[in-house]
Every structure is written in C-alpha cells, then in structure tokens.
Image (cartoon, rainbow, N blue to C red; front, side, top):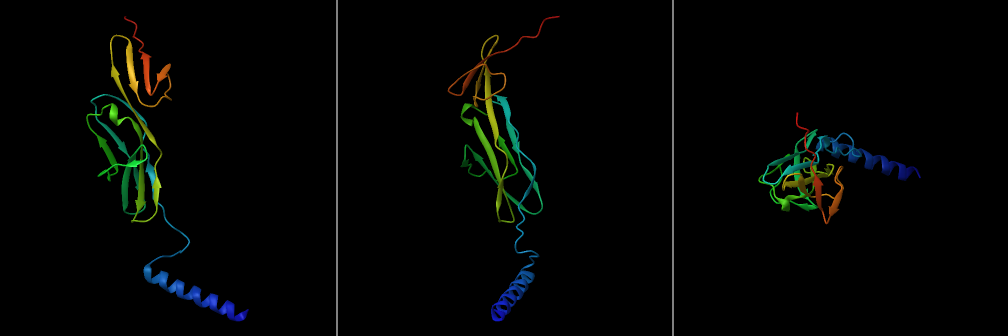
Length: 152
C-alpha cells in the first residue's frame, strides 16, 4: 500500500512539473469561451442586409457560423453579414466559439424570418411558423393582416 502511495505521489509530482513547464495552473480546469453577446432573432424585408453578432471574452477566439445546423463556408468572423437577403436565407443561425483552438461553446440559436409586402393590408412572412402575432401559417409561410394607422 505504501509503495502505491509513493507511486501516486511521484506521478503527481511529474504531472505538476509538466504542467508548470506548459504554463497550466490547474489540469482539471478547462477555460471555455465566455460568451458576452448572443445573436438575436431578426425579421427583415426581402433584399435587406442583416448582421448576426457573437462575442466572447478570455483569450483568442475562433468563430464558425452555422445555418440550420450546417457549417457555413468562410463564415469565421464574430459578425455574420448576409447581404441582399432572400427567402433562401430563412433559417436558424448559431455560432460555435472556441478559445485558443480548444473546446467550443455554441451561442443561442437565432431565427431569421424574411417578409415581403404584397398589397394593401397583407404581408407574407417566410420563416418560423412560431411567431407572435401571426394568425395563420402554412408550410413556413404566414399570411398576416397589417394594421393600418388611423388617419388623423
């Protein structure tokens, strides 16, 4: 039993020296990125530009944006800029943030809905069927009645 304790102490000492040489203080503590800004849901008009932003503190960070769970090629900045948005851009966006090439942390999922005015008092909204104030939704397309302002 004493021999086993000596071996454990020797291993702990070697591990401590290796970590000290590497600069790690605590082998059990992995520092994940601390997210300070999450992307937010947006609803914009067809043809507009939209920006989703993710920010984190504590170190150098790498960003990877996803649309509907699929990594977006070349979208590796803290800001995801989509220009001239169309119906094909509707979806759920999230960003994985990693610190110094280590473990990654996902942001919240932000929904992008796109709308196009039709005539008079109707609007078509393309996107999430779960939207407040949308009375009817069919296959992700909602037909809404816009309220007119009373004339003075």
